[in-house]
Length: 104
Image (cartoon, rainbow, N blue to C red; front, side, top):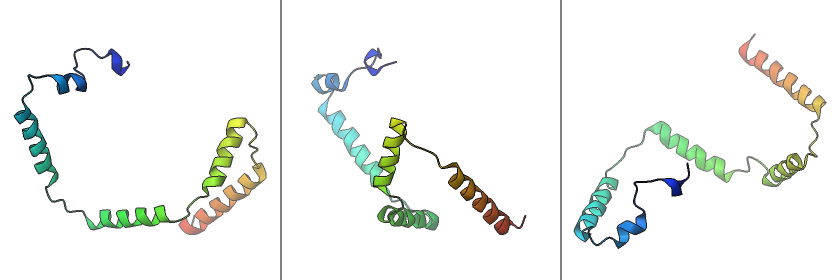
């Protein structure tokens, strides 16, 4: 269903041009909304830590954007080749690390 096919709903332009809507009512709604956003909010220490980590991650070079774009283009063109040997080697290395970590 597209937005243009919704029936029974007025558009924003209809509300703006409608003289029946009292300006005082619009002011009341704006005031109530402003008052609601002024309420103090206390975040937990964990959320503060998450926020700090998020900022730290955003500032880091966690991935190479150029390389990601090159990979996306290669996949889109159908020219991306998977190195099965490298994938297998890394899977084995990850499995060995899990075994060491979990003591299995």
